[in-house]
Image (cartoon, rainbow, N blue to C red; front, top):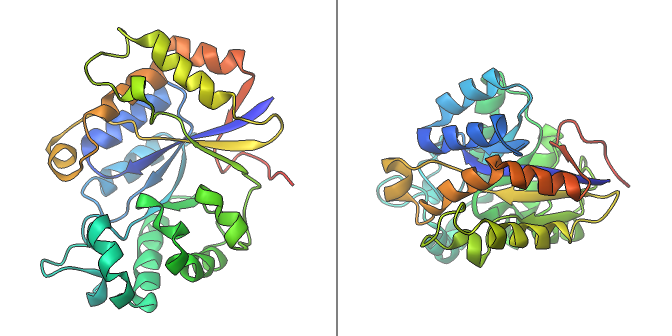
Length: 265
């Protein structure tokens, strides 16, 4: 069998994102998500997580979106917002590691103190894998004893205490037919499923692979604050489609989340 975790980023970003993720879990193949503690939909996402205890929920650490939960002055622009990713790259050297660490701890603590049993951690825009943040990532993993998403070969660059041996990491949806908004999934199902099959072909037997997705519905928060918005609706349709689930079964895919998968290796 092939062991797969299908994880949705950005839980808590907004109500529309929250309900797209929950639909993909309740009616589809989604098994896991990571929650943004600093975004407008956070409280709602926490409640939805409690109402859906079989959904694995981790923390989606944020440094490049929204506003911080701490008062770290080196982390924000003149309006008190985190720098966007393109700005972050220009100002990261002026940020203090102590303030980043404190902010990420505050985000995790908020989720834990809200009653969530976190399964794992990752980060918005994968910033936990950036070389300048690796020491902070190691401190976070040690403090909370949680595994981090192994994006961009993180485990080859850093020893972390609680990893699950998840060697594979793939984006399940970022391909031409799936991203084509001139045709619906229903109109172009065969091409979309062929792209998903190509990803499943990369999953190794008896190893664990995480497949990243971004299902969502669209509201003003998502539409006006994220450049990646309408395309997410198609991911909900794909994850909930019976032929997608048949394709997973045909490929001998066993679905897990970080909390119920046994470590490998």
